[in-house]
Length: 243
Image 1 (cartoon, rainbow, N blue to C red):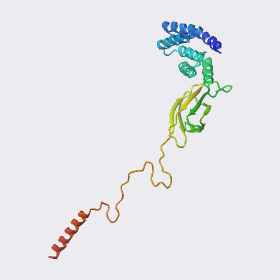
Image 2 (cartoon, rainbow, N blue to C red; image 1 turned 180 degrees about the vertical axis):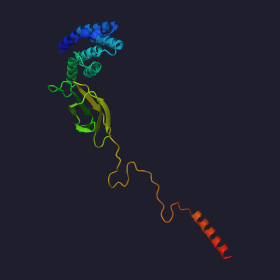
Image 3 (cartoon, helix red, strand yellow; image 1 turned 30 degrees about the vertical axis):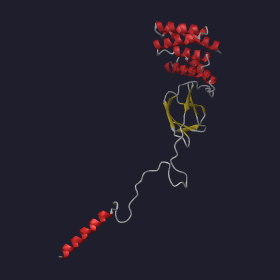
């Protein structure tokens, strides 16, 4: 498999280096040579240099993905391949970069994504969570429960993702699905504190602080000294009127 990837990528070298500045092109070529010789640490160093010199060039992250695949660093391979596709969503290299991305997803144990005939540019999204059976909603529509195998979705537009389950706080994320690949989203749900106390407990876990309402004729607090003063004034007034 590695020889096949090397062969495919070497065919693409000419077009990739042509778009880079000379120093980036030299670093990229040297990185590819180191990769061919199995010198993966050296290849990463040179390819990282090429990427720093030409950050908008898709070639360096594409080859970094190939190096990561050879070393079985699956997530690094997935990440680099995705970056390459973001930088260059169309062109002769795209099909092979998508295949590389999916091969590394398979290596990482992800649910496979197979595009339908005639839908090679369709996108997909897959969702996993630390809790099984959580409901996955995308743009308000329910797509199923976790773990959610790759489901086709509109490519290129920000997607509002909500993952929720009773007893957990909903998780929200904004995701952009790239055409031709499955975008994996891993969600960490956090248990929500219980708001209502069990029946018969007589109190809530987080009770509101409510002041007791006064009883009787008045809405103010009852003060014996205030009542005595009012009675004293009332008696004096009655005596003055009689006099």
